[in-house]
Amino acid sequence: MTWVKSKYTLAHKQYGGLVINSLFALNHSLLFKWVRRFLYLPNALWVKVIKEIHGNHGFIGYTLPRNISNSIWVCIIKVVDSLRDKGVDLLSFCKRVVGNGQFTSFWEENWMNGPLKISFNGLYALEVDKQITVSLKLQQLG
Image 1 (spheres, rainbow, N blue to C red):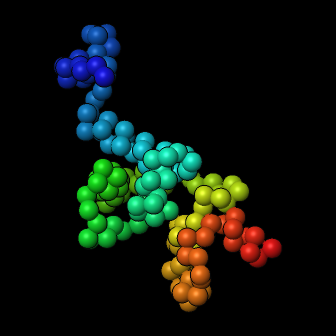
Image 2: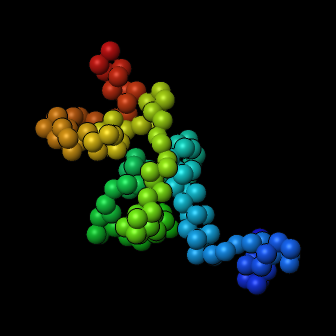
Image 3: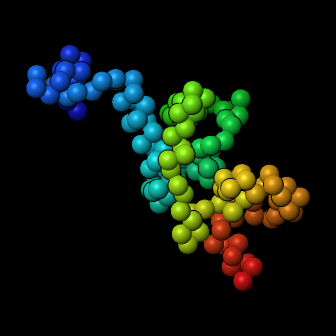
């Protein structure tokens, strides 16, 4: 990692700068890249660890419980939530592709009207495998 003085990062290119207008905005955009990677790289080891700790959704688009401990991931989610509260919904630019359904939670995924476990809570209560994926659910039905 190379450290650069802020006067060079904020300066225009013609003066040898990097033309970074706001370090605050740059930090937020770099944090959001982790959320994007979480959504689009489900096979990455760190994503699997986050899912084991925080569930398949990783609290992306969900309300964080009050008793959750502060971790790096929780802080990233809080930044995304605070931006959404200010009218900047970065998640609206991310579209989830179900694909073969191996990495998409049947009950917890945020579908058109929210998670199915909320819309069909009676069926969800009867479900034996609450962490079932779309591909496994389709195999059960087929």
